Length: 243
Ligand SMILES: *Cc1c(COP(=O)(O)O)cnc(C)c1O
Image (cartoon, rainbow, N blue to C red):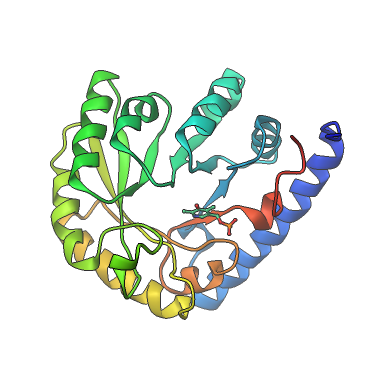
């Protein structure tokens, strides 16, 4: 039997974990000599119910991340309008171009642009919906990209793809995103990302976002210039406790 969703208990739990993550971000910023305001926390709510999104919003969260279109579109549609208005919705997952139209109807920013075909599909979908969508190029930091890794375009392809996003009428280039590869020092990977981001920013001064860092490696990401952290399990828990 699935236990009922106890809103009061869950709110306490989310509040406590959010505070712990806030403290980690605060310490990481102090250690790096960066103001806390440099870093935006995106709470990754994938696999968790819409009630959690509402609770997080009440606790002051204004940015959420999702990684599957089907789940995200249903969840966003179920939000009360006043909650939706207070949230920025970030899409951080692998993306197929046939999902572009659906995505363009609810997402504010897509972090996972890793090929030209997606740029065109998303730009067309945004145009059709009369929307402007923020876009980040996802970079692969895996040594062996051919092995599949964790998504993204190899570093040598980043500049051209970023130019293509920037040239799109209905997409706004925000910067770069990456996931640290498994089995390597995240600091080394995030340092490479920061270098690539500097290159992109030189050509596109408005594209200063570096989306990096998750529950396990957010300190390293902050030390290496991340402006946006995508934190899931440290706040929501490791698996869905409710249906
Ligand atoms: C799930 C996910 C996260 C959050 O990961 P946690 O380890 O749960 O914090 C961040 N980024 C991406 C791309 C994800 O898919």
